[in-house]
Picture 1 (cartoon, rainbow, N blue to C red):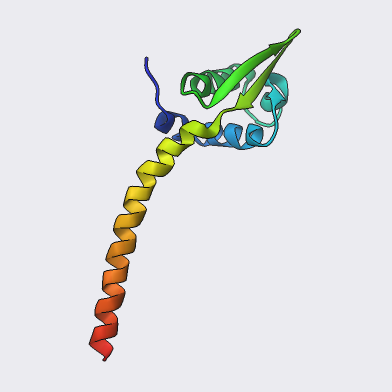
Picture 2: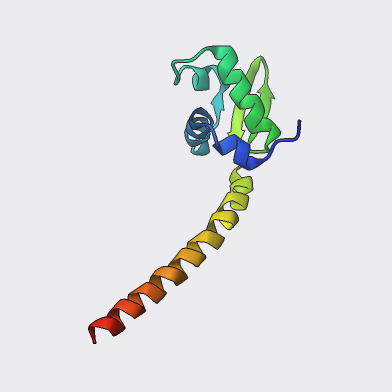
Amino acid sequence: MRRDVFQAIADPTRRNIIGLIANQTMNLNAVAEQFDISRPAISKHIKILTECGLIVIRQEGRERYCEAKLEKLNEVSAWADQYRQFWTNKLDALDNFLKNQNS
C-alpha cells in the first residue's frame, strides 16, 4: 500500500511521535516508553511514518534509531497555504465591506 504524508499526520499518536523525534534522534525503545500503548502498536506507527518518508530508521549496533525527515511536511504546508490564502482574501474582503458600511 502506498502511503502519503497526510495519512501519517492523520493519527494523533503519529503526530506525537514526529514531535518527539523532531528535535532529537531516539531509539525505538525510548519512543515506545513515551506512550501508554503496546510496543507492537508503536512499531506499526513507526512503520507508517517510515513508509511516508517522515522517519528514517538507522541501525547502530543492536539499536535502531528513529531520525525525523520533516521535508515531506512541506507538502502539507503547501496544501494548507492554498486554503489560508483563500480565507485571508475572503476575510479581508469582509473587513473592507464592513468598513465601507460604517462610513
